[in-house]
Image 1 (tube, helix red, strand yellow):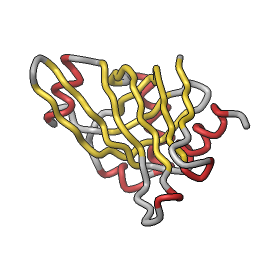
Image 2 (cartoon, helix red, strand yellow):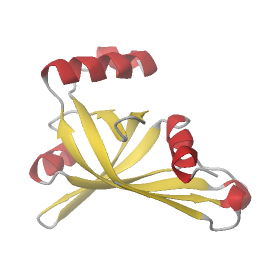
Image 3 (spheres, rainbow, N blue to C red):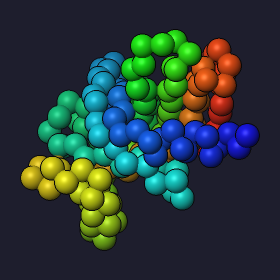
Image 4 (tube, rainbow, N blue to C red):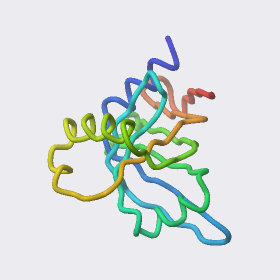
Length: 140
């Protein structure tokens, strides 16, 4: 089994992440819709700069998060924990990312918020369908 492909397929087939941010002694989490770019190994989110988590991201670009559906059967549990660096996109990069984001989430066209790129540095996937507690890793 190709571990990276398995993790990437999971990321492509989901759309909601929990983003964890911190700066100084302040911590905050937020749920965000995302799309995954496998070539860049990046997640893209749209979120307002005035939000608490964005204010923390501006101060500290190191972030972490999770992506996990909520199955009822324990054998169906699959999920990813990730670490990365986040940055707000501008100019042509933002235009390209927004086009892709709007195609995946058309309702986002009506939201005025910048798009951000999470450059993944580490992924840890738990997939019980491969064996209880099976872990797969990817690192930059």
